[in-house]
Image (tube, rainbow, N blue to C red; front, side):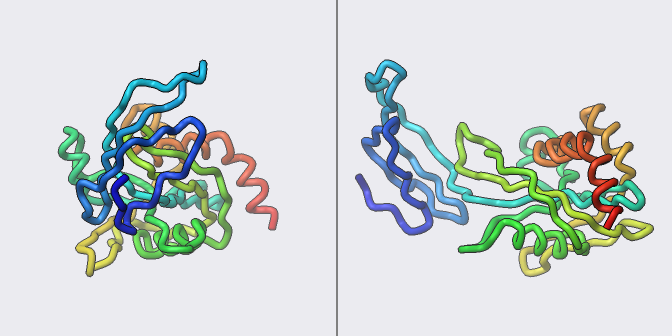
Length: 213
């Protein structure tokens, strides 16, 4: 098997995974890896040979900012080229998120991204879970959180990192309006939709727990 540059971590061994060839065909910001392999079927026999391209994005984290005092949420809006390529509106509403730095805890990541992208600080963060976003083509795993924040009265502020040419705009919504947008399929970002579904199930509990302190 060909040696991999450090940016493409080795695929861990597994009894079901039968590797045959492995190469990095693009080593940009996120490596693209082409792997030829077989997998072990349910009866123990090897499958036919498969060749897959895999986008190595690694681990990230995303947070839904929730204000239990006013029962509002915060989202950000920013330009997304892949959304435009997919025929979607390029200004996408989503939750603050980012990739984990080396040896960084996921909660540290979302606290940093919340400040950088939304200008907000969470005084309490609840862990929701971790989910794969595109298991058919990428190794990305997102850690999901909900953060307790005191939201400002008005939105419209912009954030993001100037050295990355990033611009994010803060959007404030009553939680019920966000749920209604979700029901109308107006929230087109999957992690944000999943977080809002979670909040629908947990808002009353968070209201009781977070306001009892």
